[in-house]
Length: 326
Ligand SMILES: Nc1ncnc2c1ncn2[C@@H]1O[C@H](COP(=O)(O)OP(=O)(O)O)[C@@H](O)[C@H]1O
Ligand SMILES: [Mg+2]
Image (tube, rainbow, N blue to C red; front, side, top):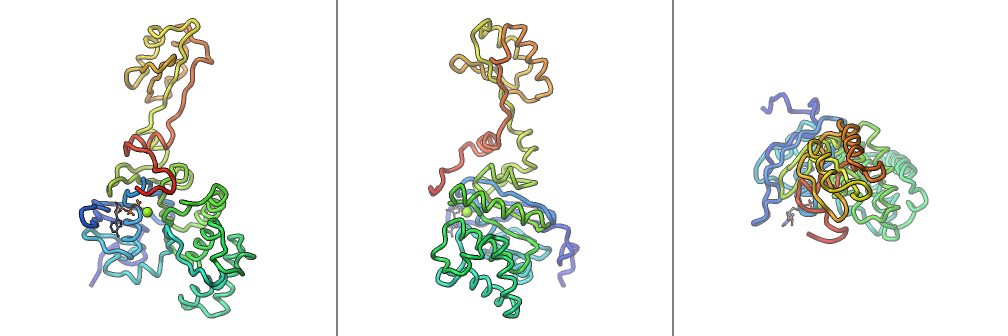
């Protein structure tokens, strides 16, 4: 008997993964990944190319067995009860999974039929989804004629034929042009408002920041940080104060004025002094001190840490340029 408090769909957690490991030869694609995602949350798995995002998603969606570790999805064990898991999830893969030759509408109907809908149920569901994803007209044409954005929207629609309780979106916007990305973002926004649990992987900081309530940053198969976007920024991304020297303001006077507010020693960069600050609460005092040292207001700039700063600090590298393999 599998009697434990986590088993079955009554679980409070949509995803619970403990120490997942999976190697490919020498590569530790997942090197001890643990994740906890409550029901209804939009969770972002953020990491550069090759970090282990797809490997994690494949394990959680039963497509790949972990070498070790345990994962429960919708309350069911991914290795012990894969059919139960599959019945409750939707997956939009990094690469489109629809049939090229037939129309978008036929693809959606086919999926509905595969899930046991009657022909008329499947048609009704297909038309609802085509309308929702703005694909009514293209829906009649063969998928091979679609633009990247249309393909991705069809892929999203395909994952929703049977309303999943947990939706996995593996880099839903990678490779799309800005229009396609914006259209996909609209669709994701609509979906995430409906209460479905979503695990979204992305290399785009902006995307994680925009959608996810909670983010796990992964690199080299490990979770290197976890928290809300605001928490990650607050914990890791310091704000930066830039003071333009000159006028009545010398480097010595500026340094003396900012030192007690600075998180680390101020750095000279050309005719600027760059200062890392942890706590924005002292900003008013800091500006007053600089004023007393001879600075005017237009010489002072404060930039709040971006997700890019956070990401860079965590992984020691920038996002890979789009379309380039690691
Ligand atoms: N089927 C596989 N065979 C060999 N190596 C793989 C395979 N799948 C993933 N890897 C390797 O595992 C690492 C993580 O890959 P992946 O999970 O696809 O990362 P991401 O989705 O974050 O880009 C990479 O180094 C990748 O080359
Ligand atoms: Mg991937």
